[in-house]
Amino acid sequence: MENNKNLLGNSRRTIEQAVEEIHRLGSELNRARAEAAQVSKIKDDFLSRISHELRTPLNAIMGIGELLWETGLDETQANYFSMIRESTSQLIRLVDEILDFSEMHDDAASRIPEVFSFRDTFEPAFVQFRLKAQEKGLYLFVHVDPDLPELVRGVPRWIFQIISALVDNAVKFTDHGDVLLRLYPLDFQDNAFTLCLCVTDTGIGVPKEEQQRIFQKFTTVHDSAKYSGIGMGLALAEKLVSRLGGRIWVDSELYLGSTFYVSLPMEMAAKSHAHSAETVAGRTLRILLAEDEPVNQFTTVELLKKEGHFIKAVENGRLALEALSRDSFDLVLMDISMPEMDGLEAAQAIRSGQISHVDPDIPIIALTAMVMPADSQRCMAAGMNAHVSKPVETRKLQEIMDQVLSRRQ
Image (cartoon, rainbow, N blue to C red; front, side, top):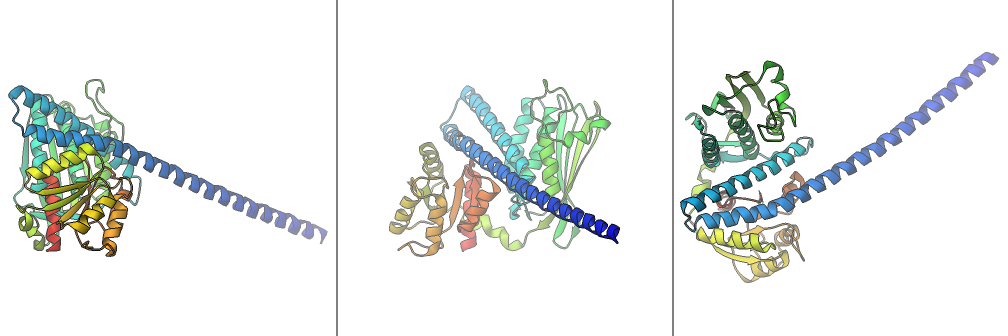
């Protein structure tokens, strides 16, 4: 009997100790989760700040570059300008790669599908790809299958990043010959189909044993002293393809070239979207620009004036509200980080309907260097119609203005 009591006592103490240990481990786990969340927030804040600080001057460089190009340059000046533009584009792509790769670890990363045209969206990029290939004495062939639907629903930014990474990789590792980019559809079922991307080069190829490792970040298979880069392009492409529900693989032999394949599930867009660009293109728009950075304000105003638009520029959200209460505008281009009243506060005030003589439904486009997924979500929550990241080309900005205004008609 005494032994049974001792056993029960020992068992109770063991259970109590186990419960205490579970509580202790639970507390440590909660503390670790809180610390991890704090570290993640610090990382996101740091990346957002770095992105903002880089994109703000890059937007000015690109804008001034566009204005300079239109002044009529001689051949030598045009060559110098092309070098500046290409270097700027490389820096922008590097910033985008770092941010996009960071987003891949966040399940809440922005993946908002939109309707777009492959030809209209990517044709200007194909021109840039060809120019980059020509700098190495290569020729880039681009074949877009005529059966590819004109309008599709997807994430064009991510698809562009995938194509860009594959073409950049092909050009980098090809010293002689050609690069071929093909886009074609397969497996049509109702409104769904599979988009196939193929990039073929005549470069140095990838050894069989390295063909999986090349999709790991910061990995370069060949001599890193000869081939520049930080080894993120293919890793980012693999992550983006995975997030889009697709596949990526390579068929390659050393010294005989490579073909990279990507398959992505896509959706055809309704025909009703086809009128979006035509309905407002060519109109003279009255645009209110809220932008506090002087050089960016100047370049945006000058570039849009050259497109035939009337632009009124102010330095913050408070002045934007005053301008809207006095004059009539077709849309607002709103920076986010501004003194006195930021863009989010101004958008919320407009949408509230409580500002006298201000149309609460006026289209508002965020034009900002704040490009993290949370930034885009905050803009949408504040009532904005679109989020455009700096730097942006005039043509792309015009397309987005057309799309936003066409939805209002």
